Every structure is written in structure tokens, then in C-alpha cells.
Image 1 (cartoon, rainbow, N blue to C red):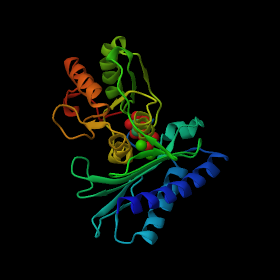
Image 2: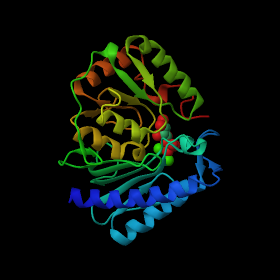
Image 3: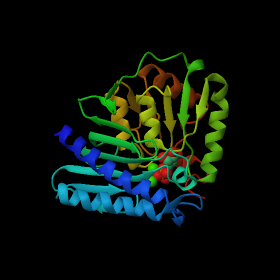
Length: 278
Ligand code: IPD
Ligand code: CA
Ligand code: CA
């Protein structure tokens, strides 16, 4: 089943990618804001989600759907599609060629910690790089199988991360980073969570850590990492998800988790003053 779902996700990611590339060639502007003034949505995000929703209804009637821009459908088949129609919207808006369509098919309760990801596809229409995985079948960039190698020591590790849309949370995230940036090679804030997971799988960064993600930011990417031999963990003993998510080689994840904890980077979100506010 997982390969069939992967093939559908691939087909639809390419279709949505074509739409996004066409729209990006024209004029793109902000249509609305969401959690804060800097959390933007363009008409293309909505158009891409609409395309994915209606194509899935044709190809997989009965499957559930959870999309960032609000399309939702409960599942009668046990399969739910978890979709970010444009991940990296700020990059898309600024025409930085680093954004993606992220499509996952999950079984079980469609929430992190409960779901099993069966298939995941992350497609960057600006570079045409296609990352894909089916559960138990490996992770690939195009035709090339991905395998996470032996990790470097922490002081040579390149860390990808991202910041929340909440200003208060970002200040806290920078405080935590300021404690560890002197102990690693460097950080990358590339602006597209799904491509950060893909970068871990492809060995373009050594480890990734972020807080306040939503299910569609990581559903597809987490399968790329685990199928490439890495692990996905949450902060403390919590399931991975909004509170926090680590991705990478198990040794590095264990080390970074411990260090983040030592510097107070695993304070529960509800205890970070103003974390959910602008
Ligand atoms: C965002 C990107 C970004 C991450 C944010 C996400 P969006 O998704 O993945 O890298 O740091 O947390 O919300 O809003 O561009 O779909
Ligand atoms: Ca996203
Ligand atoms: Ca998005």
C-alpha cells in the first residue's frame, strides 16, 4: 500500500508544483495573514491546496485530508493525507527558490505520535528536486537512495533550525541558540521545514531541531529521515510535534537533546511567556 500512496503523492506534488511555478512566474502578493502579521498566506497557497484536495477526492475517495489552509475531511478508509500546499511561503513570496509541496499519507489517528506515516513526498518546484519515501522502502532524492552517514562530533555538526511566527517565541529560540552556537559548526535557517528534513536525509545538514511546527510541516519529512536511517524525537519524553522535534542520526539527536535541555530549551510552550502571541 505504501508504494501506491507514494506514487499518488508524487504525481500530485508534481501537478501542484507546476501550478506553483506558473504562478511564481507572475505577480505574487500576500492574500491574508494568520497567527501574526508575518504569518502570511498567498492566493497560490490556497489554490495549491484546492488542487490537491480535489485531485485526492477523485483518486482516493474516502481518504481523510488535513491541509494547512483549512481543507479538512475525515477518513473512512483509515488513510489521511496531511498536506502543506506551499511550505516556505515567505521564501515563495520573496522568490527565494527554496519552498516545497509537502504531501504525506498517514494511517491511524492523523496526529503526530499516533499516526504511522506510509508515504511522504517533498517537492521543490523551483529546483525540481523531488524527495520521496514509502514506509519500509527507503528514502530517495529522484533515483538516488538516501542514507544518513556516520555523524560528526557535535562541534562539527551543521544544525538546521527555524523560528516561530510568534515574536516572543523567536526571542526565546535565539536565546537557546546563543547558548549552543559556539559548540557546533554553524546553523542554517533555510525557511522550509519539510526541506530541512529532506536535507537531513540527504546529508546536507547533520541535524535539525525546531519547535512550534504543525503536522503538515513534518509529516512527509519525518518519513524521509527515518527511511534514510535517522530518528525523529520530541523534547523530553513527549511525542514529536508542536512542542519540539529533532531529526538526525541517533547519536547526535541524543547529544543535542541533552544540551538543549541543559540550557532550558525544553521549557513547555505554555510556560514560555507570550509564545503563541504576535
Ligand atoms: C513554515 C516553514 C518554516 C518553519 C515554520 C513553518 P509555512 O511553514 O516550514 O521553515 O520555520 O515554523 O510554519 O508557513 O511557510 O508553510
Ligand atoms: Ca509549513
Ligand atoms: Ca504552508
